[in-house]
Every structure is written in C-alpha cells, then in structure tokens.
Length: 314
Image (cartoon, rainbow, N blue to C red; front, side, top):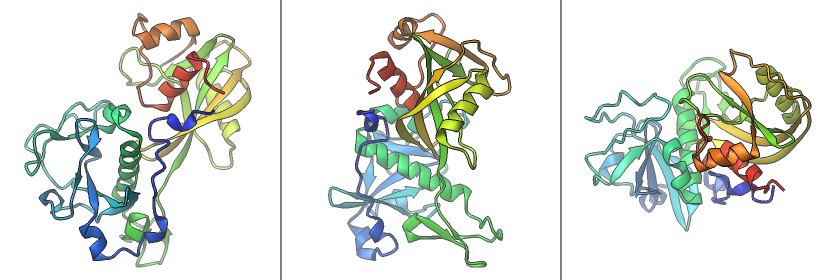
C-alpha cells in the first residue's frame, strides 16, 4: 500500500538515537525538551504537544525517571510521567471508553491540558503523533512491568528507559509490543464489520485479534475471522501497520477475501457483525447512515475503510 505510512502514528521518521541510550550526561538533560504524561493522558496546547525544560516545576515529582525518546530538530526529547499529581477536578471518568475530561496543572497556563490521546490523535502533526504514541507505550510498560517476571524482584530502569534489569537474578527485560491483525475482509462490493461489547451504540469497526505464538499473520487473519464471525477467508495480504499504544500493540492491517457470506457471530467475542456495501459505507463516512457509526478517526480501521472506499489500497 503506497500510502501506508500516512496512518496516524506512522511516517514521522523520528531519529530515536538508540546509540545514545544509557550514555547521556547531565548536560544533555539541561538543554532537552520534555513531554509530559499524567495517568496515560498527554499534555497539549491546541493540537500540539507541550514541551517544557528540565527545570520546569511540573517535573518536580516524576513517577519514574525520564525516558529518552530521540532527537527532534537537534533537540533531545524525553517523556516524563507525573501520575503522582492529584488534580482537584473530578477524575471518575478516567477509565471510561472515551474520557472527555481535561485536567490543568497549576504550574501551567489554563490552555495547557491533559487529554485522552485517542480523542486527539488525528489532530496531531506526524512528529507529535509518533512522540505521543511512543511516550504513552513506553511509560505504560514501565508502569505495569516493574517486577522481574523471572524471580519477582523489583527491577530497575536502564538504557534511559529502554530496558529493565533485575538486580537479584540478572534478567534483562525489554519493552513489550503485542502483534495484532486487523482485517479488511471483503466479498464482492461489501466489507465485514463488527462491534465489541461495551462500544458506543452504532459504532462498528474491522475485526481484529492477537497473533498467537507459533502463528503467521495470515493464519491469524483466517482464524480470528472464522472464530468471531464464522467467515472462511482465502487469500490474505498485508496493507499497512500502526503502533497502537492502548496499551502496547502493533496493528497489522491486512486484507482478506471471504469464501462465504453467512455470518455466525460468537457472542463471547462480538456483540454483532454485518456486511456493509460501498454505498452504505459512503453514507457512514458522510454521517448519514441511520444505524452505523464509523470507526474512530485516527485508528487504522478508519484509515483502511476510507481508502477501500476510495479504491486506494494499491
């Protein structure tokens, strides 16, 4: 797919400067920029990430040491988690499907707000999108992998955030990325859509699932589609990929040709599945369909469906 890297979180070309990890000096931090996350939410102003210097008071109580993300226009960029901060505003919606709340830190202007990345990801320029996705994924990994999976001892951050070592047994641990296939399954003029339990009313997307150990990407596509919707798939191919830091997936966008059209939904996997014609999908994207809402803008499902509709999958 020629435009594959135009997907959200892709195509930025960030210099991750891996050769500098673990070799940075104090002076490197003094001239660096820091992007800030709080409980998985990113700090923005309008549609851009806020960057602050090392001495800014918002960095006074980090939950973990800064993580080195790379170099952007000659500037070293770090990510910092300040989840120890307790805002005065209500935070009861933080774990909902779409957290629309915004938090302002007292050391920053009111125009600087913490927001849910899923709701703002499509508004970022490519570089900010890649930085935000990387920061959210790597800080999320440190939050959930603080103990050695071999002996259970508390591990320690190394290589400026890109490794954790166990001081007890010597094991090394590296950031986790889970491979996921997401499938544009077509038959004739129609595409297969599904919805998960708990999604907003009317929201449909492409079917997706984790690749299992010992399984190829193609086999995972066929297995997941058959398990979830009872559809057998023939030819399978690759289209595009998307880092998906919710919390740590790599979405591998594939196409597949359905061999049958009789849907049999597994109720434990899906709430519903259906075939949607190109004409209906045009109504969905225009906001005119009476029952179907489109996949979230910025997600690879939206990207693939939009380009299938426009016949731009080559």
